[in-house]
Image (cartoon, rainbow, N blue to C red; front, top):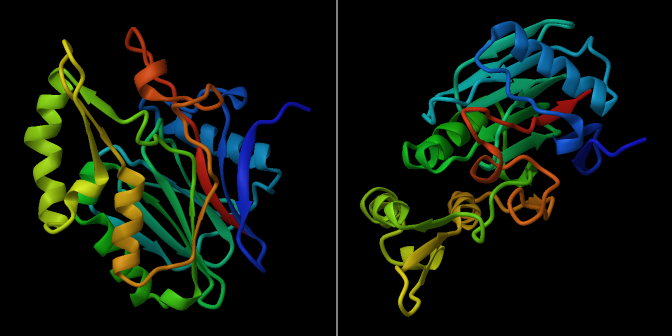
Length: 256
């Protein structure tokens, strides 16, 4: 049987977080509502979980700061929400379809809650981490009980800004990171200067997210330790999106 996804199990619980590989197919639904539900069903089949689990599909397309909480997902039913963070209680699943942006799964066994966060830099700049953690704690999550899993995403060697991208980074991303980390913002950038060529910068978004979580007291973080850009196992938008066609992975957290 071909390998179709990678995953990590949360400690001492029947919950896991994972991401599909290229071999599982393309999970870009091209804006179709029906297509999105079909893609979610395919995720659970691949992961070997029964479709009776209630699930929520996160349409993380706005790169905003909205987070939704579901008190109880109904068995066999799927909900679809446009947001960049989802939290649910009890048995169920959350899934969304990134092409390189960080996908971060949360689980608190004692509180019986799980969640998924889209960690794109625009979402981070707009306060998604603070919003997510505020709601997480409001519904019972505790720092000392929360486990966090980082799924494969673009690493600093893939997040390279050169040419017009370098100008965009300097004018748009850099000021935002400086505002968040005024004393040590430089630790998240690697400015490269080469003779006879334009300078470029590498941006370590994962490291920034880790620091922001640590600042807020969340310490138990696990990294699947793979990226989407340095190999060819996962879809990566900068490499694979061509001629108007997009390719996406499926990131998921399942507790059941």
